[in-house]
Image 1 (cartoon, one colour):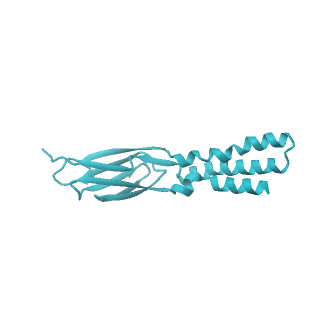
Image 2 (cartoon, rainbow, N blue to C red):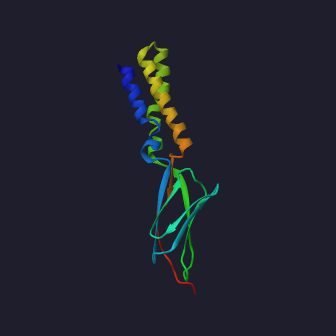
Length: 153
């Protein structure tokens, strides 16, 4: 029974970022004045565009992203998005600790509880892999862009 409980905990905690954030991210772009063209361009020909106020969706694993905000008669603004790791991704460490605990318990003859800990650990390790493949481990900053456009001289 204990092994089943540990397995369920491991499954719930594994791939936390994929389950809580998904593989896409919304970048909100606002400008003053509104009605500007906002375009995100990333490496690998990933792009999204809209008119401010805009909610642009890009894959979380997109890298090298820049947001251009332009409007006729105004200076174009460029904002670079930085990609970093999000908090739910790090939650995969919790069940991953089951691997060393399971190995230690099995060396002491822990039997069923050792197997349960190993299963939980494998679930956590699987979470790292799943979050990496889906790109859910990443967040872009800033995810809310608010610019004031200046008139061209």
